[in-house]
Image (tube, rainbow, N blue to C red; front, top):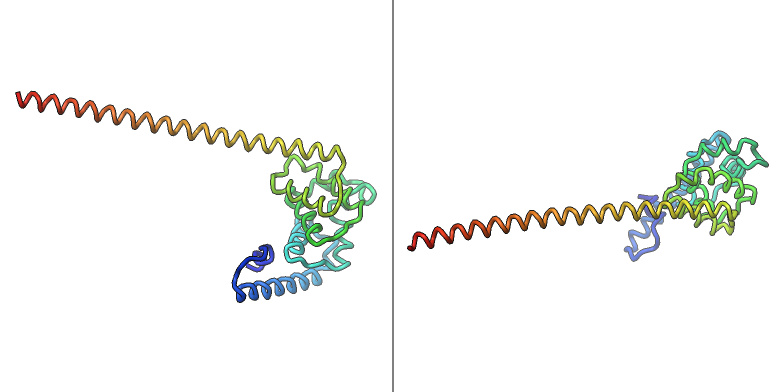
Length: 217
């Protein structure tokens, strides 16, 4: 409920509801801050999924991470896999999921963070390895994040991005066409059944009419 309140935009809800949402968000922010403080000794050992959850939660609640968290973030997240910080960037990036990568960039952008350029370059290099697995949501979040962070990926990276996005659109169109064809086929079958039923009824009525005429004669 607190996360839903944090993620929703302002609406015309009653004053009591808005006040409750504000208290709920403030409580969630406090709990998250306490959790991050308690987990500081564990930050160097956080797994990719953990970093994804941290950035997503901070972004949703608009809670600015402390300097200790950011220091580890720039070193241990996918952008930290750039060759200047870690020579095993290609293999390390595969530990991330498309959703995890998108969540990290989305969280940074929503919080107004300004990652070092080497971080963004490393993120770009890591993301391209998983780009074929991205769905519409991950593609949208990642492009929005780059835009908010005022970072322009390379032309080669963008070409792969648009090619993959176009492929997803074609798949969606194919699914829509198949669904439409199935609907037409079902309609034709149903229409055929109705036509057969009407023909049978007409035949029965004609037979009944003949019997009545014969009885009258």
